[in-house]
Image (tube, rainbow, N blue to C red; front, side, top):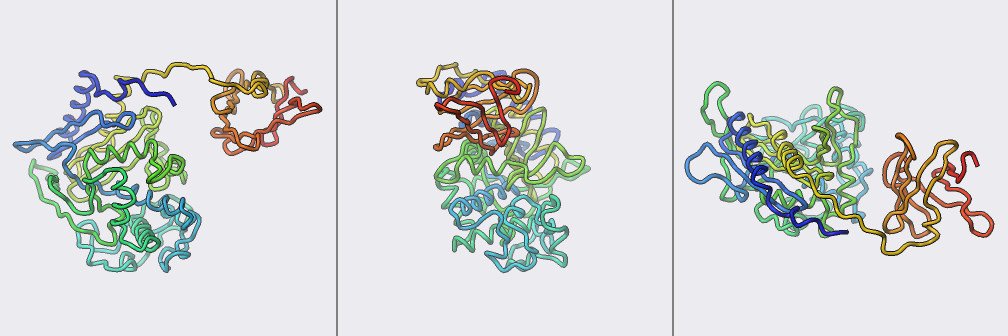
Length: 445
């Protein structure tokens, strides 16, 4: 891997910084937010932060805590994926294999992560976000009269109790409270010392703004107890920048890049009329302005939060506000990414030749034919291959070399399929077999 240009780690240019601050200021003014903090991460580094505040004195900064609501769910999902990677559970396991929760109706771990378990959206009343968790001391206390609203696996139906169950699952398999597990396994390795279950100064106060007057109304900040895995965490723009860098590239101390990539694969078809949004495994997915973003939004009484990552742009945007409603927090975070991507598109890395080439592999490159259709086969680094149509659109894929001399498709139609070279007498390649599709050197050979 080549080293990115040094400019990729520098702070944005003055014109970019002004555009970022203007977007933040517009979001705070139009959304009537008591305060709003924004941040941009580029190539894993925090390169810009800004804030706007209606209060007198010092403004909040990247070290000021805000409640991040459902962004907590992505942290819990990371804990569950760690359990999977260690072999302590399978995503296809029914929850009942690990816990006695008949209310879950046989839902699997994956369905709970993807909000396809069929569980109700909210916990048993009173309103769990505004009342003490002591009202629901046991896991069974979070369910109302109708725990299951839909058949498991049939549709996406956002469920806060579903993530309360995942937090309880972590506790069961780790033998410790989920918050302690989170601190030990995620927060400490990622140096997220300003992320916690309870607020730690300096932190913003939670407010609602009167709908018909510019008047602030205080909001409660309850410890939600068993419902905590659905939205309890407090964090800062600085800490979330570290988490965004982790979501982009992974960290073997916490979770590898392959497992994180699995979390951002759509797990279910989008809801009707919302084809620009979806959900993976504890991760929200959106498409805006032709850009694919993943991360999560969050809200709790008095607070809004969003973290979006664009893998293609190597950028992340973070927005935090201390208002129950008002600021378009998801759009603000997405716009921070867009502004940097448009103002300062990355400089392509220089082309470099392969350092060594296997003559047998080089002999495979060039034109191949699937019936009458011409394809090009190119040799990439690490003995990888790339197959693409010679003209027009079609089934193009990259392939990873395997120890047994075959290749595995990485994307497109052939993702996961096996490419092998079929040899004739003398070991000369006769054709390529790609999941039973035959590619020959001549049309219809």
